[in-house]
Length: 55
Image (cartoon, rainbow, N blue to C red; front, side, top):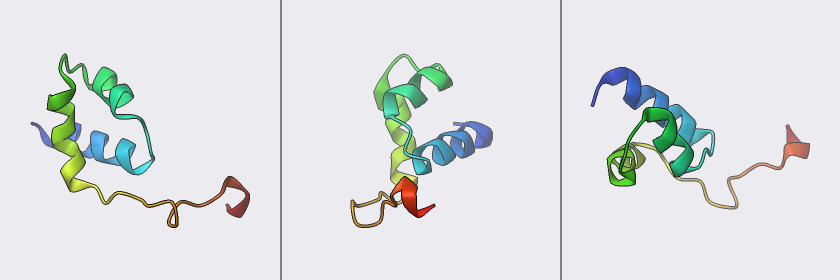
């Protein structure tokens, strides 16, 4: 796992991109490879998610 892929995947996860989309962008054949990146990103709860109207 290289540093740039890790940063890219982490930023996409923080931006709420779907794991399957990230898998495709990184070129992983198995989603389990992409799931490695999920442990480094704080998951959001519904309470933490902002409405587009609040931005």
